[in-house]
Amino acid sequence: MHQLTLAEIARGLADKKFSSEELTKTLLARIAQLDPQLNSFISLTEDLALQQAKAADARRANGESGALLGAPIAHKDLFCTQGIRTSCGSKMLDNFKAPYDATVVAKLAAAGAVTLGKTNMDEFAMGSANESSYYGPVKNPWNLEHVPGGSSGGSAAAVAARLLPAATATDTGGSIRQPAAFTNLTGLKPTYGRVSRWGMIAYASSLDQGGPLARTAEDCAILLQGMAGFDTNDSTSIDEPVPDYSASLNDSLKGLRIGVPKEYFSAGLDPRIAELIHNSIKELEKLGAVIKEISLPNMQHAIPAYYVIAPAEASSNLSRFDGVRFGHRCADPKNLEDLYKRSRGEGFGPEVQRRIMVGAYALSAGYYDAYYLKAQKIRRLVKNDFMAAFNEVDIILGPTTPNPAWKLGAKNSDPVAAYLEDVYTITANLAGLPGLSMPAGFVDGLPVGVQLLAPYFQEGRLLNVAHQYQLNTDWHTRTPTGF
Image (cartoon, rainbow, N blue to C red; front, top):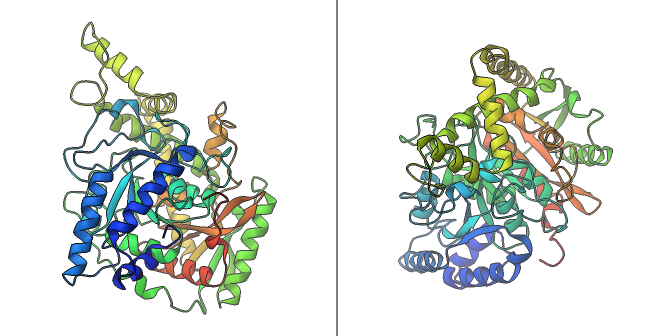
């Protein structure tokens, strides 16, 4: 049962081949057996999962149906879950139990999804390798000596290792798409505002977006259907109708205009990945797509702009974690200043402290105009580049990452080297566009992803292209040895 996709699980439950309770027990046993190798979970919720599974079986017995009814999933540990630890991968929130459910959690629970647990992540979603977690690094099931990508590495590793069929994740600069590429999954970052951020602990509020991680585009369509929608609790949520994402999966790609930016194929891209991307382009051409070279001239400025804007927002968002109301509090503070300093110094890890310092500096008097304001102007230029490109093409295609997954610890002494791995993904967050990564092959036994970007609210088009590609390739069906 652990090899079944979400779509296959939905069919199996509808045909009464197995019950949600049987499936849940099988996967919980698998997690207990295999996850010690991976460290992909922070918390398991066995009692809740079995309770939800029994309730889903009862709803089906009463005639209800639904693709997510009885389907097991897990949540990245920054989605608040009522009465369950929501740690954000940090010592700061190690003792925090959320008093309410995030909108995403509540919507999926209402659809009948079964929550198996909360997945490991980079602390406060800051990282590209899942090595900054207070609970230790997550390991890539394709090679346990390599990183699974971050910050949603726990969700990615768990799905890739067949511990569960799908999981929620978040993407601030590539944190859904990069782990998807590193672990041979399909991952979708929706349009900014498509999925509610209410109850999703913020890293950078103007960039963060929740989305699905699964093995196939079909499964991503099912999970996104349950996650997406307008939320009055979230002032950045967009009141836009949610289409049936599964309905357009089988649309023809004949005449689809795909843009390939010349800037993507620079010296920084591993030539073996470039070859796999060109192979993907040929497959899509066979399906009737038309390829056109385009330009994104301001892409080179995206990384410096992102690493001013994101830390600036993080320094503001994380100011609430002060040891006073909730979270970690230092022992025996001498006074209020000592409470703040030691609680934050003990509660936050090195990467979080680094980004808070960068952000506070960029927002400080005398530097705001020189750094933060300039970064926001570059952000607008990046968006304008995409708007111009989408006048000529329907989607944009390129690599998800410049290199395959690196070895654990390989970039710890050089944070900038890790930041540069986000070069292809962060532009979608700066512009608020939807982006998808899908499996495209292997380099040295490690998975490689191809990225698709589309205009606002065109998630259905991305899923359609990925699904048609997956009907004609088998990369997404490969399973890591031992899992």
